[in-house]
Amino acid sequence: MKYIFAVLITLLTTLSSSVATAAPFCLKIQGIAEECTYFDATQCRQRATKLKALCIANMKEVYRVTGDGRYCRVDSLHTALCLYADRRSCESEASKAGGTCIDKAPVNLAQENPYRYDPNKNY
Image (tube, rainbow, N blue to C red; front, side, top):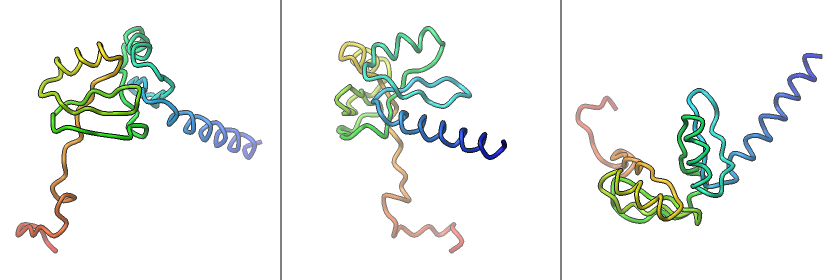
């Protein structure tokens, strides 16, 4: 009986994770796995408002990132346009364009230059 229960849980986890990478927008509720089933950011934002959650971009589905801004507008075409210095303007433009706004991932300097010497690090 325990074996069947374990197989069932594994199967459900596999199916839910395969669905999670299918759409460009996800519903994020604290304490619950992201629900990445939204192809339209407007519908995602509406549902997020009802559930007091967030509509975020599914970064596994973003194919192209351009720009040097701090905030990025992600659209249904799987493109992140990082052109915004403040979240308010990004959110405004994302709402008009049917997308969502995300923080651009900070650049890790250690990854940027693997040959950089740090005298404070114990090698």
